[in-house]
Image (tube, rainbow, N blue to C red; front, side, top):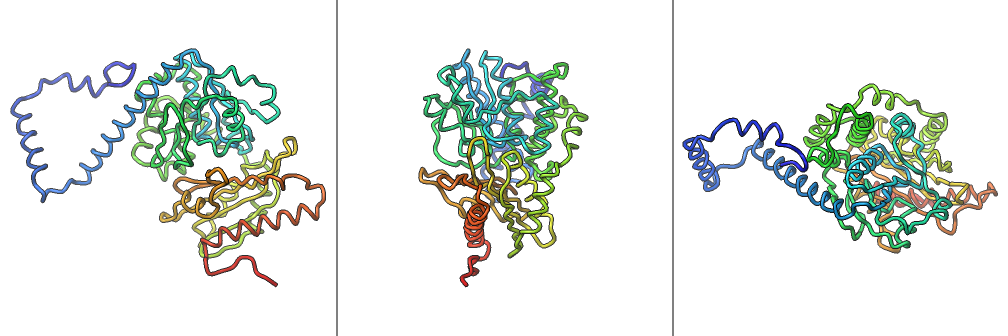
Length: 427
């Protein structure tokens, strides 16, 4: 039975008919014969039913575990930490978690450290009034972190957030980790639901809703907007549902009862900015193509324009005879004096695993954390520049620094793309 919910319609239908003892005996015999006979192989439909039942069982188990965790943290204050540049999947799921947690008198603040630069993300937040806050390193200095009893990671595992170290240093425990990416390292969390085979974290959270953790009501404006955000997150992480699996479609079917189609269309119609178009133009100009891989460095970008990188990768992968595109650049935040190499990968090649490819290309830092990872058809990486950050006032020095990073990234990528070639040619 679903959590906190009345008997669902399927259970109520089963109660309308008394079981026939003879039919039950026939079914029992048929099952025993099927199990004992080695010549009878399960059909595709039987396999699908088994996988569906297994998925439902896991969803129910995880929903119950999450409910117990929330009950144990009544009246707490929590931080929901997203990646520095949150996408629709992360934004929508964080909002859903906040609404679920409210039922247990848990106050959540959804925070990120980077920027919302993708036009659809900006439109999503503005049009739905999604409650998210940007916390910079300067913001952290003004916050009393001792007032929070826990933090939550959603659609990330802490490797893509600048805020994690400060929160951990403050001794705040990790209460919940919910993600659909492959494991990036070991994290001690009270509740863990990591499912790399699921296409979107929005699918996981929609399953929580279906299990009764929150009863959506189409007469409540906030619920409608949250369902719309979840539909957008699910849609974006499944490439407009073209890479969706059965559970994603089922989640979308459930959300279709509550979401606002006109609102979603308005979010999707947001126009690209001139800066994004400039970065796409740079990627076209700078790209090299080898073995159906398109690789492009786009130089320096402002922190607020970071989301132009994945959009450029989305564009390059549509070129004829290209199945994988990697775009990267040095993103700098003048206010924080921070620089980081950020890259995105997009692929249409079914046999290429973005997670394995990026981890193999760029490896790990000194603490054992990978510089990047991925999911089906997409991935990304972030490499801190440390001591070499900033000091770009001298144009000759800035150019030299970019050339070094550009050559190193190409070398690491081309080592996998075409092992026989040496991307750095000596004179």
